[in-house]
Image 1 (cartoon, helix red, strand yellow):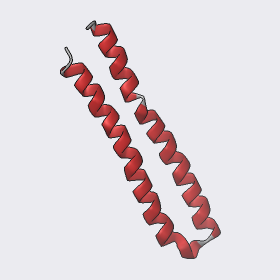
Image 2 (spheres, one colour; image 1 turned 90 degrees about the vertical axis):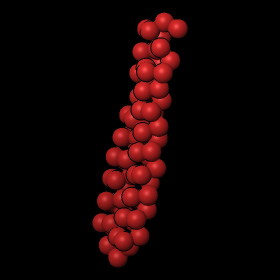
Image 3 (spheres, rainbow, N blue to C red; image 1 turned 45 degrees about the vertical axis):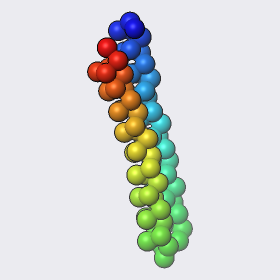
Image 4 (tube, rainbow, N blue to C red; image 1 turned 135 degrees about the vertical axis):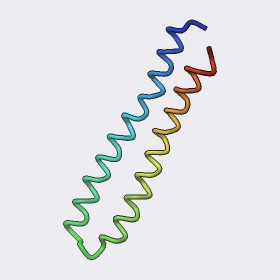
Length: 75
């Protein structure tokens, strides 16, 4: 395969990190709003926020792994 196509594919794979960052930002904003409205539920909100952030970061890491595989394995 052409190295240009591999670089484009790796760049597209890394773009899923952008979506994860946006999703984590939105979730954090909504969690802060929820804690401001109901401070007594902050423990439950925080645990759900951390769970959601880890799942979003996992998708970003998967995209990075795919990009690295494209660049270094599919030469």
